[in-house]
Length: 277
Image (tube, rainbow, N blue to C red):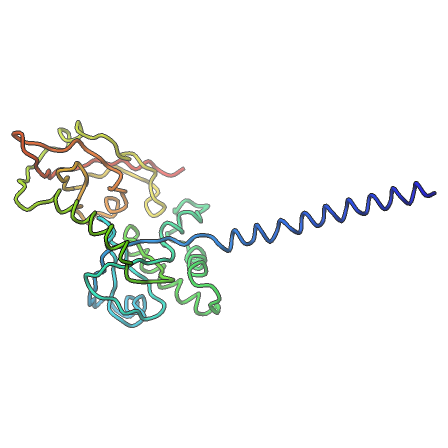
């Protein structure tokens, strides 16, 4: 009988230990999800006074339209609260890159029934700005959806924090800017090269990509670009939406030279978007 009670006691101890282990893992998992890192961008602010109606004004929290340039990519900042931003100064923004988040959420219909989904926009808003009442989430999500539907390839960034760059960040940005300026000196001649000829100098770059959710059928586009003396794409000279979604910073070419001297090259790059399955 004593052995019987001992076995029961041992069993209960093991059960309690197992339950304790399970209950100890859940908060850790939850905290990991809660502490999911926000997106971060750093660049030069551009302030524009746009007359695009009440919807764009709402994106600005009642102020002027604010953009942040990070390399060749321009982010439209979606501000929930007014912020004092100086045109031309460098800032760091933390928050949620809307299109990236929408694509990560996914769409069971692969974009064939419209992009983006309202539910995806609501989730993006909740991720950026937690604790909002239902009607506020619905309103912000509708604004976001309207903007992304109109310009699907033009990045929208929901801001949770916006601050000027620190002295260390500023020094690093200045060094990078100086390097870029040296690669784009005004006295460097510019030549035009046919797309087929320039392709031979491509070192690397994602020239084949999966079609975005907003253009699930895919297709092939030719994008007009400028390649600087370092072999990097420094400028996109087209407003085509598919061209704007290409990660141009990942492209590298052999440093262009003409007659033994560095040059900038105007050319076209062909990019193929494979249909979504």
